[in-house]
Amino acid sequence: MTPVIAKTREELAAVRSGAAGTLALVPTMGALHEGHRSLIRRARQLADTVAVSIFVNPLQFGPHEDFDRYPRTFAADVEACAAEGVDVVFAPTREVMYPDEPQVTVKSGPMGERVEGVTRPGHFDGMLTVVLKLFHLVGPDLAVFGEKDAQQLAMIRRMVADLNVPVEIVGAPTVREIDGLALSSRNRYLSDAERRTALALSRSLQAGAEAAGKGPAAALAAARAVLDEAAGATPPLELDYLVLVDPATFLDVTGEHTGPAVLAVAARVGATHLIDNTPLLFGKESS
Ligand code: PAF
Image 1 (tube, rainbow, N blue to C red):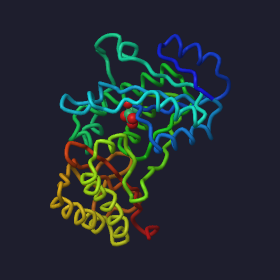
Image 2 (cartoon, rainbow, N blue to C red):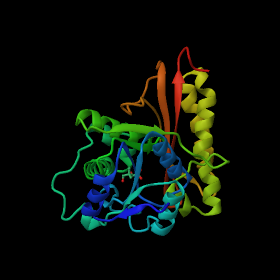
Image 3 (cartoon, protein in one colour):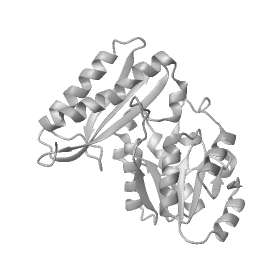
């Protein structure tokens, strides 16, 4: 089934008014891969109508980031949506989303200045602004986001709670290549050698998870050892951060922490910024 393609607000509103039952939205920036397809399948399980938005949001890219070279693969994206039984693809132009320079935007607050927000100042403000606009335009009952972007997911949960946005937020697990590399639209920037170096991200998380039974400090140290070694690889891994944080606030957890935490890592390999994370559990229940 070919999805209806809506490019304007009017086209979207027309599709929306004809859609019966519950509606799920999967917001994306396109360049769809198996990770996105797993989000769409989750949405398909949960709702009668599935909409996918495809919009490379300029507001969430810094001046020296990859907005211009971000992969745009619209025809292949629509094919992927058709194969997954998507009902509607909302693919607005920049003029449709931002008819003029927005004066009022969402402020992500202190949480948006932590961890990934240090590396990418303003990123979470731009991301939350477009997500809130998409929620208003599409009017979904629920929206599905990947757990790979753990801080993004936590910030969106916080936004809908703080601003009383009537959309249920559903997280879906990270999809990985067989060798552990988390799927990302940015993986296509990597040369073969860079991709080999990039595997250190998932390996570090694996090492952290294996050491988690000995506590937070041991988990961090085990993960850091893998990243330190990759810093000497060719090409090198340049670490932006390795943190162990509370999943809801993204504040660092202490050495005595018990309960859930997220071990999150970000690094540059060549010109590519990559992130990954794994949930960990400390205390009596941890293995
Ligand atoms: O995760 C993404 O692809 C983007 O940040 C999102 C949520 C579609 C907003 O532009």
